[in-house]
Amino acid sequence: MDAVAAEHLQEQLLRDCLRKQLDEFHMLASIFCSPGELHVDDYSFVDNIGAYISGETGRLNAKLDYQLNLPLLEEQRVQIRVELPHLYPGLEIPCFVVRSACFPRDQERMITQRIEEYIEREVLDSSEPYVFQVVSWIQDNFVELTKFHEPLKVSEEGGSAKSASVTFERLWIYSHHLKSKTKRQTILKTAKDLDLTGFSRPGKPAIICVEGRQQDSQDFWRTIRPMKWQKIQVKLAETELVEGGLEAIAGKRRFSGFREELFTEVDDENDEEVPMSMSLFMKFLDRHDCGYIRKEIFGFEQAENDL
Image (tube, rainbow, N blue to C red; front, side, top):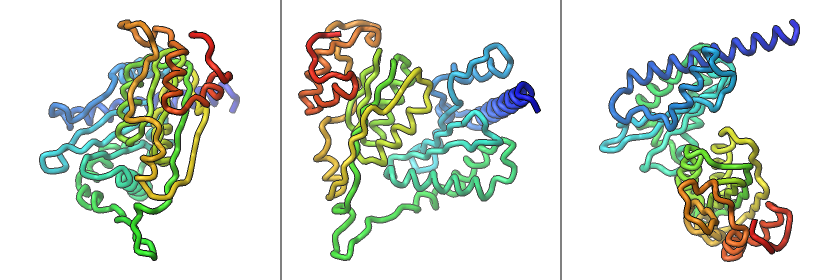
């Protein structure tokens, strides 16, 4: 088979997978049709996939993802986040994240792991969509899934996991630009959900700093990295093994909460279009004992002029 024929087959496979994704999405929308049950952050992604399938555009903007908000707990809805890679079903498996205020982040990871095990064990025909099958299984087994949580481990000396060692991490992320409101909202929500502190500077360039447990900072990076970026990279990862659990992590943080910081001297409706004041940014870094990062990001030690 020559290269042209192989490329044609790959294109056919991609369009077939995307067509099945959209068919399944519309089926789910008809089943979970109560207000707020099925939520899509940006419907333009759905329209873009439809246009790609029909040949109206040759560019895919993003993966299809959506959220189901289901009453699996008394007086409380549980979020089931679904993200579909382009070659689902068939060659790639979807990502499921189940979230509720009633269980901690560690338990979310355990539930995700059990869902992946279920897919590997019970999905017999992976060439056809199976999100509904997985969601139905989650609904039927939710009580059992929420019990799957490891208690605090007790050491031989009688101490709890609070005194165990944990890895603290601070990530400095640089991107060519950040203007999309969807990306900005995702960054803010993900950082807060993961209990990370730091800041996000939208505009051009974009600078993001998150700090907290390493497993949470890495989850943050895995969440935002697949979004469509012109360029994005981790400029510096600061890691440190500390004793004392979450209390020790709190002592390593240099920021309080997570918020957007614009570093501009002018109020403007299109705030992300206003040039960043390098002077304000450097003062902000110095206030948080992070002046050293200027060399990692911009390649110089001192800020002499505003850019």
